[in-house]
Image (tube, rainbow, N blue to C red; front, side):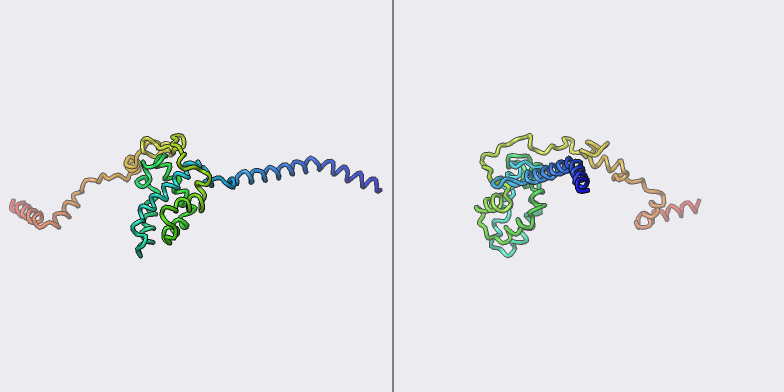
Length: 228
């Protein structure tokens, strides 16, 4: 009986062995993927879908523009409210456009990604005003969010291939069947245009009731018709 039991367990182990090996390989593969997603200890931390150079350049732009917008309020009781106002217009083409190494839409996208994760911390950095203006870039971009950690900002080069591709028609790029269609055309198509129906006779009479001169002329016309 002992040998039969031993044989049975050996047979079960032999049958289960390939499955155990496969399970072990899957566990090791998942662990390797998790480790590969972790940024290097001395490298930049970048949101998914953004190039490190773009994110670092955006961080530089954010600090420069926010510092410029709030500089004169640093010692004012209004500092906090002015910081909030500046934050409202920070991720816009008007603020970021034509001043840096990537296109305005590219910087706007990266700026929005930054604020989505770090808006409160950035607002606090400027509202408390504990870090000098010239030190804010290093404090924020290298230290706090690590967008530029390990990157030589001066060596970042403009690369058109990293820019966000805009719809040249300015239309609804990406909506099936509506590519290149502007908003006015869409509004007209959906019955939301500005054209108005001509006034009806009832409307005309209503207008006469509200206009003394028109009402007097109408009464005179009715009197003449009665004489006939």
